[in-house]
Structure formats: C-alpha cells, structure tokens
Amino acid sequence: MQVRGRVVALVPAAGRGTRLGEAQPKAFVEIAGCPMVSIAVEGLLSSGVVDRVVVVVPSELLARAADLVPEQVQVVAGGAERIDSVRAGMDAASDADFVLVHDAARALTPPSLVSRVVSELQAGRSAVVPALPVADTIKTVDDAGDVTGTPDRAQLRAIQTPQGFAADLLRRAYAAAPAGAFATDDAGLVERLGERVHTVPGDPLAFKITTPLDLRLARSLAGG
Ligand code: C5P
Image 1 (cartoon, rainbow, N blue to C red):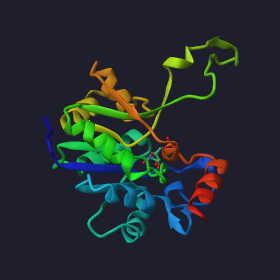
Image 2 (cartoon, rainbow, N blue to C red; image 1 turned 90 degrees about the horizontal axis):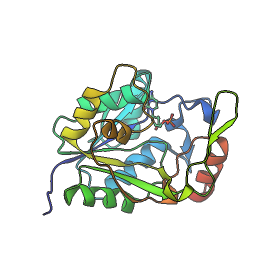
Image 3 (tube, protein in one colour; image 1 turned 180 degrees about the horizontal axis):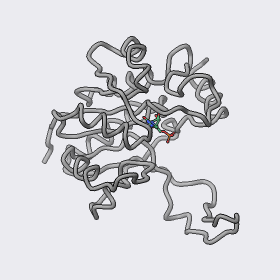
C-alpha cells in the first residue's frame, strides 16, 4: 500500500568544511557560480516528491542563506556537531510524516535518487538509505596504525544521502541518542534502536564534496 504522507527534507549545511580548505563554510562554496546549498535545495525541490525543505546553517549565516534559497524554504541555525544541526532541523519539521536528511555537501545528487528513497518510504519502509558497493579494500586499524581486520568487501557499502525515515522513528532515534553521541549518519542512530534500515541503489553523482579534489570534480561535472 502506498502512503502519500508529508515529506520534509532537512539539509544540514552548518559544517565548517575544514577539510575542503576554502575560506568560507563548505555549503556556501560555489560550483558553476552557485553555492552548494542552493544546488542541493534545487535538487530536492525538482524531484517533485518533497513538500517542504528546511536548511540548517551556521547562525551567523542565517540571513545570507535565506537570500540563496527560494522563499518557501525555511532556514534555521545549526549546532556544533552534525547531530545538533539535524536536531535543530527536526524541531522545525513537526509537520512531517517522512523526513529526508540530505547533506548540502552532496550538491550534485540527482533528483531521481531523491524519488527512489521517497518511493520506498511510501511503500512502507521506515528507514531507507542509498548505498554503493565500495571499490577499495577497507581495513580497520588501531591507534598505532596497525591493521586489525579486513572486512569482506562484498558485504560493505558506502552510504549516501538523502536518508529517509518515518518521522516518528527518526524522532525516537534522536531522543534515544546519548548526550555527546557520535554519529556520522542518521541511520546509525536508528540502527541503535534495533530497527531495520533498508538500502536502495545509490548514485555516484551523490558523492560528498569533502576535499579539494572532490570540489574540482564537482566543478568539472557542473561545467565551472
Ligand atoms: O562533516 P561532514 O562532511 O560529514 O558533514 C556532512 C554535512 O553535515 C555537511 O553538509 C555539513 O554542512 C553538515 N554539518 C552540519 N552541522 C555541523 C557539521 C556538519 O550541518 N555541525
């Protein structure tokens, strides 16, 4: 059974982006003349499956961000860690039946990936993440740099965003997260509840723009 439900997309864009080495916070760095946060919001809206977007930015950039996104997009202040920024976004999304959490840093994510995630939510899944097989062999290492294990690559996936959730499940996951919890993605908090997280095929274009090389790739793909 398909459940239409109201879809609110949260765009955490409050990171400093120190690994990118640019003068301004990452989400405001331009690709083809357009800040990443604007491109990410446009991708969500053009998917046609998102009812509302909430962007989360550093508090000193609230006014600037509001100028960069369409008028109907809400802009709120984020926090020190990504988990704090997503919490701030969720506080502004009390009308949501489904929540998407989508990093501004994945600016080139195709709208088709957004619809793929939402379709699974509407079909009854309560937590859905895009996943790609990994090309490299992945090893675990200890503090001394010595290898402690080599997980079977066939079972590993690189996880992207948007990550989609039934809104009440994501709220429960955040409510249960211990203070100072370390989470690099939202599905990780849902997994802690013992709930099933389903994967859908990701898209190479949804790569996270993290390093100067990523930025060069993004600019080259976007023609500037
Ligand atoms: O640091 P990382 O690349 O994992 O950040 C992923 C996304 O989370 C980025 O879009 C970044 O702007 C956002 N973020 C945030 N608030 C923070 C840290 C990161 O909104 N305090």
